[in-house]
Image: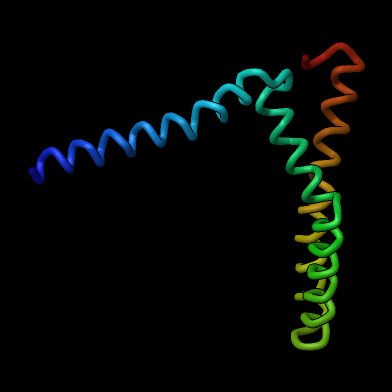
Length: 106
């Protein structure tokens, strides 16, 4: 009796997983954008959208705190890290677009 209940529970669990994941897999396959561009779009919307504003405010607040608490060099390090977080993706995209325009990397 216990073995049949365990088998039934396992089969119901696998059926539930299949019913849950099948629509997700179909939506993923029907999309026209590739995974890289979708991931970049999500990353860009978080980094440069409303949450990016919150993140940059946190970086500025940390820089001010470090300046008051530890001194100029610590604050400069925090601001440099924030600049890298927010500007390096833009620089990379700009370099890629320039390379494509010049006929380089495709």
